[in-house]
Length: 356
Image 1 (cartoon, rainbow, N blue to C red):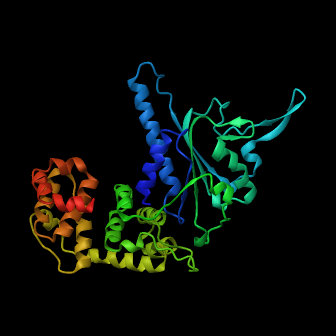
Image 2: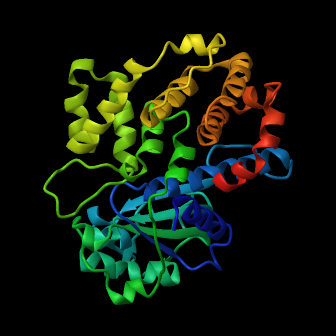
Image 3: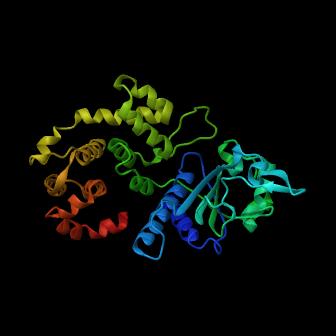
């Protein structure tokens, strides 16, 4: 399943946690499994905060309306979940952990998302203690709050991460999904967060969004996570060290191709002349991709966006749609307010529907 599909499934299930079965999300390292869980929790918190603000009967916004608990199962012992025993009034009583959403914990919101991460990296005894939590929403005598939904995440065994085979008893307590990388989903997420040259490069080389070979001895490989790391390195790393830093982030082969892509920028015409009215279009495919990325990164405001719409009439339809789509993702308001946008959108409506 695409990340967006899994995110939508988690979101809808989180609204009815007593009805929806717990979900297990399996996927290779670096795809963003835990990240989409956090996105859902933040979205639900914002929605509940708005409801509280709009309804005078609800309490004033005091911060957290919807909780998010990310428990790395691989870093826990069985007693970390049930707590420790103590003698109270002559009887042994289990004292529950303070960070698990049990009913008797007033410091945790009534609703939330409990993410059991790295489940397949946790040993059998830790997996066993989760049996009751996943199926019955309780651990020993302590019940979980009814408004909390459980999602578990783990790596694939064939990816040779540190994994244990999930016990059949625990596996049978989940609905299982497998997360696959998706360039469109990642591009939507990356707008405003990732260097435009990376976004443009991956449109040109989509197979490098996720390029992982479990048989390889190379430590660095391409994934949505490491491309985001690469973007951060571009912002701070010395220019003369960038190639070496990226090699240790996305791998040797991907770095060579990406650095070659960056060099294409030197073969491009002065893009300021295009903004002033020149309609230069390169013949080479790689230069077209590089030029579209450079134009999208440079454009600012309604005037520039209007000029790009006019320029798009002189390039291949594929690149015209790509350029306008990237601009809309960058600044939707300026794009919508550009005088020629409505006419352009109508003319390309069929292609836009296919792309989306």
